[in-house]
Length: 196
Ligand code: GLN
Image (cartoon, rainbow, N blue to C red; front, top):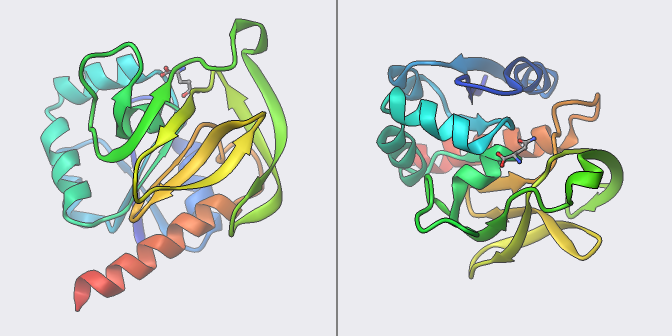
């Protein structure tokens, strides 16, 4: 069975573990660097990206997370996790993990719409996915090699680049586990190709 970690420093951790388990893999809360060696893929959850970054620095997770991604193991960043994955965050001179080639903008849907739900078509995943947005960012631009999986009001809200997956919404907060299941499949495929 695939073992998929959820970075457990802050944010919607338990809900992701439940969604991973509903998708047929084992979910593990990752709180220590050594645990990265035990898992086949990682979800970086939503929360607050600057707070999460502070905790990543405090517990010396930055380089181990970058090495995890560069080793070819899949990472799925949701909401704040998407911001942490991006190579370019608007308004910042430096990125956080800087692993996935895209430019993101924080709190993109304005204060008047702190949270809302919308039905999305997610390429290859679902054409009726009920997505929960909470102070969501959006992807202003994806780089070469990345593909857009979903848009909402002309804004990119989900994308994939090889073994990196990112979405601006919270796929763990409903009973629709199809996007998590898509990630589990990415992890299965990468495990097979990393083994040979
Ligand atoms: N706006 C938050 C940030 O900048 C992300 C919100 C979320 O993860 N729900 O980190």
